[in-house]
Amino acid sequence: MTSRTYARERDRLSSHLVRLEALAEQQGEGGVARAARALDEKLAEERFNVVVVGEVKRGKTTFVNALLGAEVLVGCQYSVPCRDLAVSRGMNGSCGCGTW
Image (cartoon, rainbow, N blue to C red; front, side):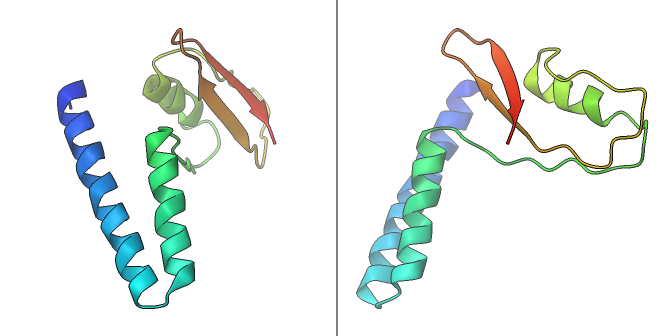
């Protein structure tokens, strides 16, 4: 997907979320309206949740690094049952991560 296509689809999704928020407000569905607003804010900030699940030593770390386009996560030779990570990309394109 090109950056132009991404921007067009992002803007289109945002307009749908704004419409959903307005319709939900009209119908008295405050929870739906808040959820639509929160999703639109997240979209504007370009924050995404990605869950990667798989068997031990099957390339999950390599896959995530490929998605990020940088060697951010380091593989581990030991079996780690679960790691929650927050990965962010700075304005200069550099990546960083930390647990939460």
